[in-house]
Length: 604
Ligand code: F6R
Image (cartoon, rainbow, N blue to C red; front, top):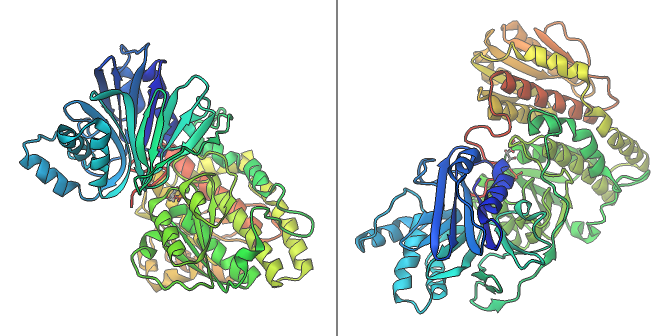
């Protein structure tokens, strides 16, 4: 998804902007650009594809004195990923970068064209810079023109604008898309759409609120709120820890992230699992008072984690639980009652659809909880309570360790609630706590297992489709396995409940239909086995993943004997992640940045 950076200071502005964009690369993008204003002269560069193309274009350009600069990585929404559509967009004397969508751009554009303005791109963004220049003609100063322009926009945006009219300032506005400004002892100012580009450069940051706008110059930070009242920046310390993970010898971040799940989950559990109970210091038990139902809401992989949670919340915590896809929930006029705890699940905390449902829940006066990986993200700032997943920065676009930590948090939460609601005996809780502590071992990648999957993967590079099938919590895992494969291999895959295949999809069964059968020992083994046999009888090619040898399968990936189906879930999760990874590797795809995908989906 799009990323923004900005800089005011004396250093090599180009380097700082490119370095910042590099930190945002993992979010997914299809073009990039920068604009630098120094001594009243603009230099602007854009390139499609990877940042290396932009680096190449800017190799002879440097700034070694005071300059203001803005940069952007674009993930196309309005108009194709071409150089003309890449940001920054130019007017007569100004440049702009923008994240989000301007909903009334068509009417603004029409009026500007009627006034004789020529547009170079197909983007919604370009209207902002022309509208600003139109307003500038009648305004006392650039800030008044900027303020008027922002008031005319509808939609979601984070915007940075630089103009020759006041060549030492960056004008900013934020409404619905994240943005922050950072400072340091050298009096430099950095902007970005997330923390990472600022780490190592800034000591303190101010996260803009929706409706904030203003400007930053070398000496000043002027912020106004949505009611046009000036407000003081609210600075918080920025971690000095350079989170930008390296690949540590792995070919792709996704592989590294699969391997590090064992350590990461140990972090998620740290301090939260005692001998007797689950402790969430971040939660007040009052949050659960008067609650009779939990509603989980999320997108994509986070939705699959939520589906998994719905089984264990009802099973262990004995609390009615429903799950919603955020983009559907938004517009279906749902009935929300105050005895429902609304739980949003999001790795990034910025996904537009999920964020919007959280706002809806707040408006309906529901109590809200967020399960999130990014502290200070929009969702974390909005919710009544947060449980952080502690997965560290996830760089692979295809989510792996985030899913693993989400399910871990949900398992812990189900036991926390079981204790509150007395739905499990103390003995049962103690047993579950023991199992929880075994997750890090269950997700350790054994060399032999990885080698087996690598070898098998060569048989699964074609076919007319994959069905990942499972029952109970292995159904959401099947959905997740299919999503992983689709995302990075571009092969068609579906996740399906094993028992549902006979109600239609079994018609597709033939040797070119690949069934990836999730067959745990400790949950509905016989039932699942019969469903797989039905497919085997119709000649579907079966790859079974199970601790128990299964002679009807064409291929078999043997998992370890585990004490409980939850631990089998985590081990089989690693197997399906690795299977997708190996298939994608063999197909020669860019595993970490699959085509058309973005890491953080901040548009609806
Ligand atoms: C899939 C994937 C996406 C995200 C989805 C929600 O690998 O990463 O499906 O899970 O876009 O993102 P978050 O969790 O950040 O809200």
